[in-house]
Length: 390
Image (cartoon, rainbow, N blue to C red; front, side):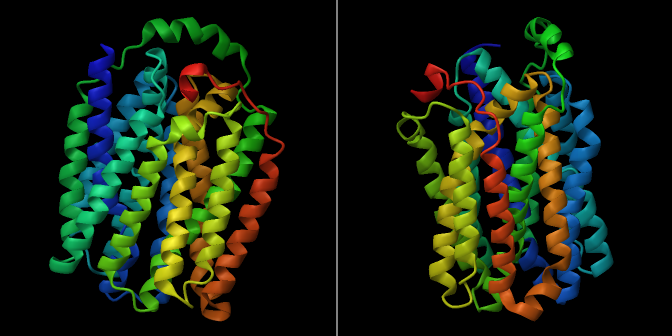
């Protein structure tokens, strides 16, 4: 496959699939509240989301042994996600929402890791930085979130799931134009992969760090819309704030060659993303005092950090486990992150009802700080390649 064809196909898939995911996952809390779920039911529903994400990643990750298999697993998850998204729009009772939430979340976490594994490896073979493709995913989120502002202001929230289904289905269909056969590259790396242990000290440390930082941060993102809604923020305004924040993420992607010019190691990107996640959660502590101001600040700070994480996460993991097992490592990391978020989500209502949203977000901040400390012990990895920093 030519470099141009690969780039255009991946750009289209990232744009459409991330547009669909934005419509699907951005309004869980709002949908549950609008369907009359009380605080306890909301905690259960929000709790099973990362738990099912963890199960999906844990069960599917061993099969992502090559970029080709990662591509097929992405397609499989994408098809199920389309089906469950469509069904989700017709569920309004607690038990039906619970079952569908588990089903849709099981297939929602892993496909992004599978797609990232395939894309990062394929683009690297053509000397194209992964960040150039990942920005199309961010662009997809921006489009859907801005559209969500008008959709939620004029249409029922359930219509978001129809849009999600159609967009994701189109992205999966385009993926069949990609060629998953990379036998030449895989054969060259087979000896290295077989001789390299998987669970090294470096992998364990980076898994612990990302689990604590991203797991706690993800838990904060599940509860933030609940806190904002309890403080009177309309659904459409929340979507607009998220859209503006993600637009800042896109700007960060576009400026990445300048921002990373002085980077020597990929690990620096993890420092930036971890500090940003911690700062975002600390800012979320104050949403009860000024919902709009601190929602804007929290989401924008987090988005700037995410751009560095998305751009370099795959490459740092690749340094540790190699190309062939990159999909396994990324899905394992995603699963562990969601496992921690599950625990926080399940206890969230009992915590914030007793000590308030400020106390809950502060607990998450402490966990993120511990993860940031662990990151200092992670190996630096290989220096940035010249084409990545230009």
